[in-house]
Image 1: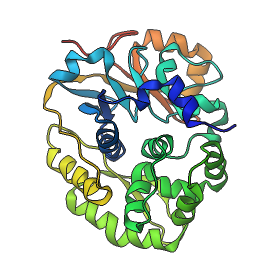
Image 2 (image 1 turned 30 degrees about the horizontal axis):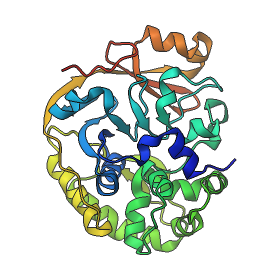
Image 3 (image 1 turned 90 degrees about the horizontal axis):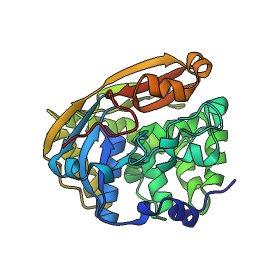
Length: 309
């Protein structure tokens, strides 16, 4: 199987349209997508979602049915989205996800073949989709590969990353994969990128993955817009300075809508069936982060956005 940019744009034409309004995941990955979309498509950032709370601007509320959710997958069918989580147990796709551009759905990857899941980040998918040339500067490449710890996935899961580099054809994946497996990236991340992110306050935790050569444990950053605006701006400035991309205007938050985040063992979901689980728990978004876990968020509504004017 090979993806074709033209085919994806035909199915999800909004991914090539300008001036949309969007919500991002409240983390490093979402922020780097936001500056890309603002610079290349003039999309307007209207809020954030951290899988428990939605922070949204006045304009976002006014245009709630036309928002695009980036680095996310949500169920309401009016909510178009782009993200890379596993969201299916088998070949049956919940109706709400038919408006989502998700590499796993497009490739027919479900929890049954979890080891073949999309290993890259949303920002790399956008770069491939819009045929943007990867920078030749090592620090810039490190910034890109830090999103979703892709550099470590390229080290730890070589067969799967190679397979996806073939699926997402006509892109210089070998260039990135070779760099991710080099001594140079570990030196840059250990001595330059991570110290810089720590100084900025843009580190909130660690992931399980560790590098092969220096045993570096991947750092991640999830933010709260209520008190992390300075860090958000610092990260956007870091991206702007290195890629010469125009950062989005930070949204003035009008409302914060709180939901409830829960998890269910995946075997129970399989036994009960996803449609029943979705309806009974009034699920707004969910993901299958491992072959054993089903994480979900509910705002107490079914098949519609929790955002009210």
